[in-house]
Amino acid sequence: MSIPRAPSLSTRAAFFALIALICGLLLVSLFQLQALGAQLGIVVEHHNRKIDLITQIQVAAHIRTDSLFRMALTDDAFERDAYFMEFNRAGFLVGSGRTALRELGLSAAERRSFDDQTRLVNGIQAVQERVIDLYNAERRTEARQLLVMEAIPMQEDFNRQLADLRNAYQRANLAAQREASETYRHALVLTLAFGIAAITLASLIAWHTQRNIRLKSRQLREQMAELEQSRTALREEATHDPLTGLANRRLFYDRLQQAIRHAHRYGSKLGILYVDLDHFKEINDRHGHHVGDAVLTEVAKRLTACVRDSDTVARLGGDEFVVLLEGVQGREDHFAVASKIGQTLNAGTSFYGLDVDIAASIGHAIYPDDGIDEDVLMRTADAAMYRVKTGRGSERQRLLPFQ
Image (tube, rainbow, N blue to C red):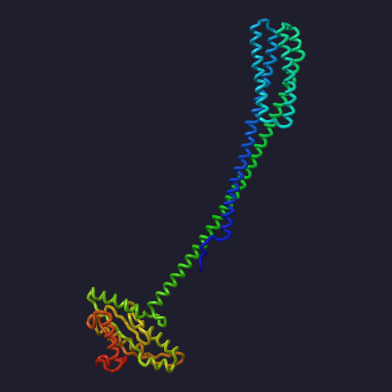
């Protein structure tokens, strides 16, 4: 079972979609904020500036007319000169305000209104200059009449035009404010929509990723379990005989070495019984290998039943078996176990409806009497088994019931 290492296509697509949503959210927010800033700039800088200039022009024009009116009321020449200077300063403010207003930029309608105001301003200036000339000629009655009959009405018309223009800019201000407010709401809705979409998608990606992690973790645990089973099987195969399940030669020698070290340390004894089946080749030749395998399996079971759990029964190969007996007292223990094995093996056995007699030759060796390392002990036990099989064993061995 393989675990995919790369993210799935759906996860990658969702991730890129999330990035796109975040980028879209950023771009929309920037564009909307830029538009909102431009609209606010129009409101704050452009329209309000125009309204301020119109107010300046209107106030200056009023001061200019008021100065003329006061000049007509005073008989003091110095006072008249002061009002005249105030009249000139107001005229300068009217001119500079109109120049600044024109430089801010005017729409077509504003341009037409501005041109009408220009003609009216020129007319007002002409009348005001005539009034000044009459003052200078000491014809104040005529000056006052001209002021009342022409200058003041023309100034009122100019004030109305300025008021109309200021109202137009105020309406434009309100419209810009509404647009800015609408832009803000639009940006807020888009930001919330993109944000909610991004959060939802991120949550889905997190859930999907978490689910994949759990799935892959389970797959990994299953793989680890399968690997452990395989390792156990390989270890079992490397250390046990595949037919009988007994320890194989390698495992037996490992246990024998450990048993020798333990016996050497504590001054105890251990024994080896080398078991070789008699006439096993005839069983194979007469009845077939399947019967021979059944015999070997049965022998393994009977050998295991004859010894303690702490002892080791191994199949060295073919029809050769070996038994490791730990903690024995002497040869008498060997002979007792060997006698038990012989009696157990000689019990009647039927395989596939065939009666098969099982007999074995058993040789033994004891540590440390017959050797102090595994090779010497195994050779000694093998030689003893061979002597028994060929009839050259000791008298005591020939008298054992399994001969």
